[in-house]
Length: 380
Image (tube, rainbow, N blue to C red; front, top):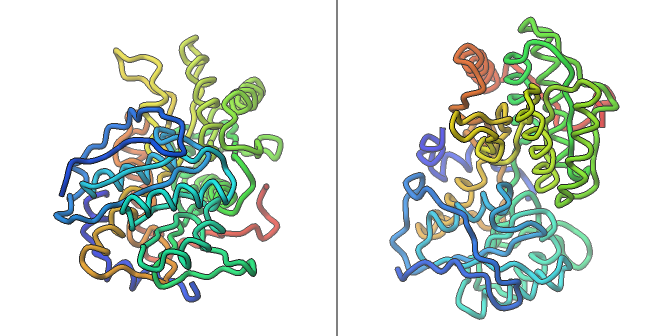
C-alpha cells in the first residue's frame, strides 16, 4: 500500500483530493529552545525515495515527542526519510508564541521548508506564512488561521487533512470480522473533529459488519470516552481498565500518548492470560503492543492508519520538482491510499483481510457511504 501511494504522483493526488477553498549529513538534533532529548526513531529509509537536493526541511513537534508512535513520529519519518538536510525542534511550551519561536529558529537556520503536525499550529502557521513569504509550510490536520480568526491558506502553504472516518470504518470492520462478537470501546484524546471522525467511522464499520458480514458486536455509549488530553498515559490506562473490567474486549484508541496508557493496560492483562485488544491509530502500533517478545505476540489487533509519513514525503518531493501545491487544501483518503490498516498483522487472519480488502474495493467504487459528521445516530 505504501509503495502504491508514492507511485500515484502529485498530479493524480490533486485531481482526486483537492478541496475548494482551501546534500549534507542529516541533522536530527533537538536544540535551541527545546529540551534536549535524543530521538530513538529508526526510519526505514527504503520506504521513501531520498531527494537529491540541498533543500533543508524542518519540523516543529506539538505537545507530543518525536517518538510518540503517533502523529509527530509519522510526520518526522516522512521528513527524515526523504530529506538529507533535516532538523526538528520541540518547543518549550504549547502556546502560539512557543510554536512561532521554534518556526523562527528553524527559518533563521536556513530551514525554509517547515512541517507542522497538528491543528495546534493553525494560528502560528497563519502568522508564519505571512512573516516568512520565502518559506514553505505544510500543516497536517489543520488550516492556517489569520489574525481575524479566519482560515487562510497562503500561496506558500499547503493544508493536509485525512479522511479519518474511512480509516475508522475499515478498522471497525476488520476488528468486528476478526472477533465476530463482543463489546468494543473507544477512547479519544480530545473531542476535536479528526478524533470524532475516527469514532464515527469506527461505529459505522461495526454497524456495517453486523448488518452485512454476520458479526454481533456492540459499542455502548458508556464505552465511548474522550479523555480530554493526548498526553495522559495514566488516564488512558485507567479508562481502559474500567472498560476491560466491564467486559470490553477491543478498544480503539485515537488518543496519542493517552492511548499508550490503554496499550499498557492491555499488555498487563494479556500477560496474565486475559484476551483483550487495542486498535492503534495514525501509525502501525503493533510493536507497542508486544507483550511476548519470543512469540511476537501483541495486543494490537490492527491500527487505523493515516499515512502521515507518505503525505509529508510527497510534499517535499513536490517542492523539489517545482510542483508545491501552495494555497491548497488536500485530503488523503481511500481513493489515493492515504488511509488504511496495516497490510500485515499477525492478529488478523487471512480470511479477515480478504473480507476487509473486498470492503475497501467497495469503498473505492463509491458503494459504501461513510458519514464524517454525526447525523444524530452516532455516539459522541
